Image (cartoon, rainbow, N blue to C red; front, side):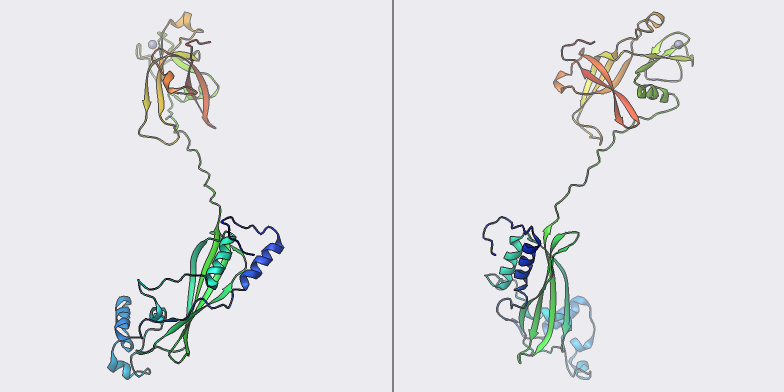
Length: 341
Ligand SMILES: [Zn+2]
């Protein structure tokens, strides 16, 4: 089965998968392209450059006299240079065309196995190479694994084997090179935990106020001595310095005294632009006889309100909303008509 359209074939049955895998296996053992001759013979300058680069001081690679006295009888190349002797240069011909390797890739692409990762290579050596050896490389598709699923995705491991031959067509070494051709795992965006709104700092003197909010009551403090209503909460009356107070429940309504819209800095847990309003709270009706018309102001954010509705003098109703499982705060909702229930 071949696929000429860019759409991906889905082998949804075990039989279809088996057929695909069987087709894939027909590429195993096929030679990839023409034999590749090395551009240069094995030579002393390239050996010297490599051992200098890697810091290998073994004299059998660079010192003719010492190498002559060794079991090698003369200079040899480091075995790990095997691949270097047939590497095409920077401007060398690129492999392309329509050979077995490309066809195998097209088959893998047709199933969506479009990503690639080199996984490992193994070299094996038959003999040391000496200056003057001229290598030719032949590449075959060595093996294709059945379908595997890794952390990267699902795909097939494809191993190619490069065999290196000398001028007498004798095998001098081989390299297995394994890649993983895979379908990238669907990127599941990590569940981004909505950062919790930073909590207000609570103290011995204001914890009760948040506790009342948690019960749905918005309160101020009234001095038990002189009756002055105050907010924010504090330990002492600013008028008479009494430390006795009553809790006064406020109606959930008020008027915008002033506002700002914050853009920066952006603190996680808030949405921006972030309106911040200063609300003249309506006085407590239940305490009006006792306490008079003291007004308090509270700072809060708005909710369900267009930024364009922000205006000094706009009427708001206050909604007490949970900002996390253990915290409730007041929010100002701007009434469009200016009426407050
Ligand atoms: Zn007082």
